[in-house]
Image (tube, rainbow, N blue to C red; front, side, top):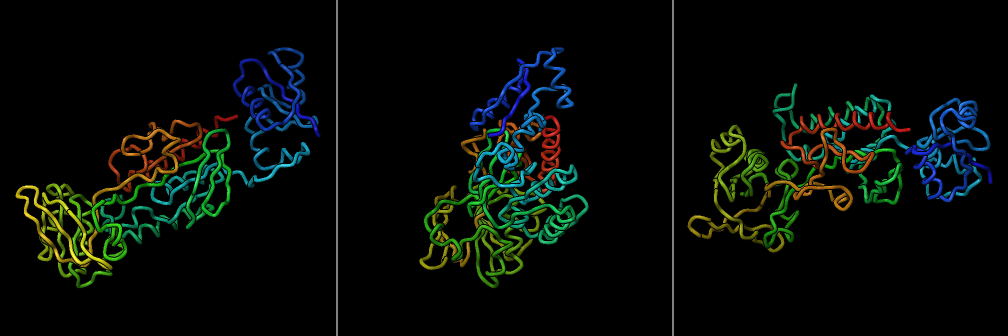
Amino acid sequence: MNTLTIYSTEGCPFCIKAKSFLKEKGIGFTEINVPAGSKEWEEMKEKTGSNSPPQILVEGEPIGGYTDLVNLYTTGELSERLGLTMEGLISPLYDVIIIGGGPAGLSAAIYTSRKVLKTLLASKNIGGQVADTYEIDNFLGFSQIETADLIAKFDEHVGKYGIEKLVGTDVSSLELTGKIKKVTTSNGKIYHTKTVIIATGKRPRPLNVPGEKKLIGKGVAYCSTCDAPLFAGADVAVIGGGNSALEAVIDLDKVANKVYMVSLTPLTGDQMLQDRVNNSSKVEIYTKHDTLQIVGDSAVEGLEIKSLETGELKRLDVEGVFIEIGLLPNSDLVIDTLETNRQGEIVIDDMCRTGISGVFACGDVTIIPFKQVIIAAGEGAKAALSVSSYLINQR
């Protein structure tokens, strides 16, 4: 076996990390202590050209410090130099893997690429939650742009930087502790990276009433943009009273025969959206009503609701039910690893840092208030710049 030598000094945190890493991997080494100003210190400077311990040599050839050691190990080059047999490592080593292809993840990818960081974007789709709405009216520079067009512009912009993308495959697990992170996809492939940005966004919240699960895809839907055209000429219901519910009603108003809106509370969405809904002759609104069950065997046939004020029961004969009662954060991958709040949102600081070194998060999956496309994009940029700063300060 070839020999590895490490110049180190007492109290140096990176020296401690380098030695611990080598011991963890079962790699033997010779340690030379280098007190400042000693002949060993001068020897280290002469052999490596650096006066900053740790400095590591293989067969007398300098390879650098702690970060260089870990990078060489991950790519397999260190094993080759030392004559070791290593399996299961994937090359190349990424500077950052971004998980999520919504506005936050795509914005982060643009900024990491501009910082010349080797980037992999892994996402089930491109667009994220934006794809579940019809149009955006509050993204700077674009007035009433259809989301399909906006997503296409996002993707085109990212594409100009030649970013490596892994789209259509879920990330099944993450190993986030340690200097090098491991990302495993649902097809069993493993990717290694120095940092991770989690930008997985949110997903629709289920209503959890009888008939809902059984009739998903058979009249029960969560995306009016996706499914509204399927209900042309039909009577449908939308559950919820916020912006997403109002937008769903507006989408359905264009194609459906009749649209019922059912909300536990008075409407809470933007007044502009409320005005559009209230001005439609097709829409009938039931506020302060609870949804009891969705009726139907092989397809949706109706919706049972109850007045919270009078207790009156009512059945609405509908062929479709769109559930728009909020969103849940897609934090399942890290719920036991990273700190989250009671809603499951990832806790971050003002630089998008989580509680684990080298792991960042941005967008709607985090605790940032005001879940908006423009805010998510800004947070993605901030996370990328934080990654760049983090990597610069590693040694």
